[in-house]
Structures are given as C-alpha cells and as structure tokens.
Image (tube, rainbow, N blue to C red; front, side, top):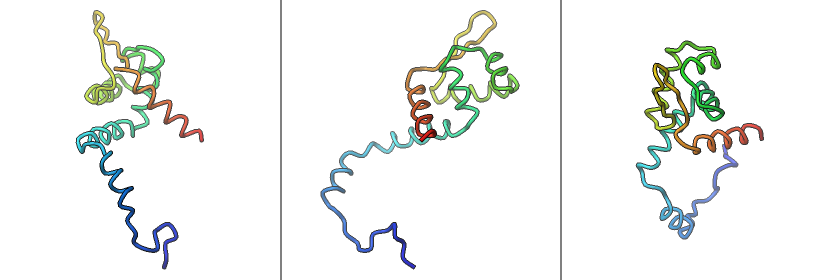
Length: 117
C-alpha cells in the first residue's frame, strides 16, 4: 500500500538540510516552547488569559466570569504564574491578576485567527 503523502524515492537535499539545521533553536528553547504550549493547551487557562487581556481582575472576578470556584481559579492562576504568563499584586486583602506582557495577547490573537480560518 502506497502513501501518497510520502516521498517515493529517498533523496536528501543537502543544502536545504544544512541551512535548516544551522537555523534550529537550542534544545532548551524548544523545551520551553513545548511547556508553554502545554499550559495553553487547556481551555480554562486560555479563557482566564483572555479575560485578563481585557482587564486586571481579582480571583473573585475571575471566578464569577468563569463560573468556577475561587479555589479552582486559584489553581489555574498558580500554573499560569509558574509559567510566567500572569502576575499579581496585592492591594489590601485583594490579589489582582494581570498578564505579564503582551506576548500572551499575541498568542491568543494568533490562535483566534487560526481557529476562525
């Protein structure tokens, strides 16, 4: 049985291989990207990040938006903080969360555009 999506002969294009190999990222960079995509691979975390892209919010606000318990939202926020995607600041007894930088917004926008194609 032939696979039409495979090369029918073995032919390595040495120049192309050499060029791409020279431009590959370091292994630790690939690992970090993979870890970030794992974090972004959860719909709940994407929704939290999207909400935070609109406005700085406290855990109670996020719980209300998400329809989840404070504890469940806090768990997701801990994962997002560990991945350096969100940060928080204390104001009295309140903890307000926001995105670390605009990179997360760009990732969400690209994901949205791709999903709508």
